[in-house]
Image 1: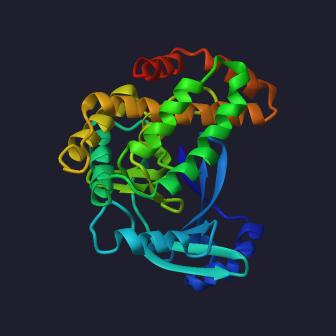
Image 2: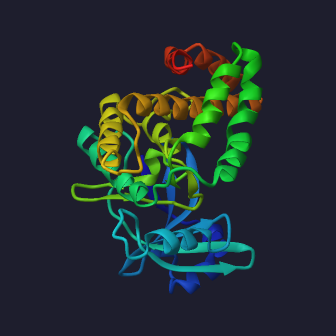
Length: 305
């Protein structure tokens, strides 16, 4: 469950300079975002001095604001509006218009369809075929291949599968990828869908966001969205993307690309668990390697070789 809680005196003091830039001087007007399901506290703050907005501490100066300006401004996409961006010392902040609604974890089949259409609307606009393979190659070796090496001792050889995954990185259409497209970064209500937190967005193979949204799970192996919602999301996404002349992806290839995306996500999960040096996490990791969904992913890719 997501909630905003009041700041402690120490927390308020720590970001008081940033709050002043937003016209906030009263501690009772500031609330900090907490995810009780994942037991995480974020550097995200609800500001409410009559008009609600959200203040977010970012990793790099103006990065998220630059993404919004470059790709979203004036396009009418399902993204929030940037109100302000500024730095305080070494800390960087972006202020965003408040969006009502819950995040997409556990969302309905209908919501899944709406989210698929919203993502496709953005990605179809920036769809390209070929080019920028240097970016894809760099991403592949930094984010995929190194994790394969970590997992390899615990499972059979991945050489053939790895070769196919790498091949798809260079062959598949590329587009604007969110790169952290988790259900927590999608807000839904009865009327709207909004995709938030585009800080790490870049032009990369189209399939990278798909499994991260549809099949990601927590350390207790609970999927964040129901299977029927994941299916509706993927079906809706493909239906809208297939209208683009540049897409040229058959349904069979699309399902295989989802397997490629899933493979990358699960290997990342397993690798992080192994590197955590947490005995329980490692045990869960080894159990996951033998889980039916991971075997099916590998077999699906191998069947295409």
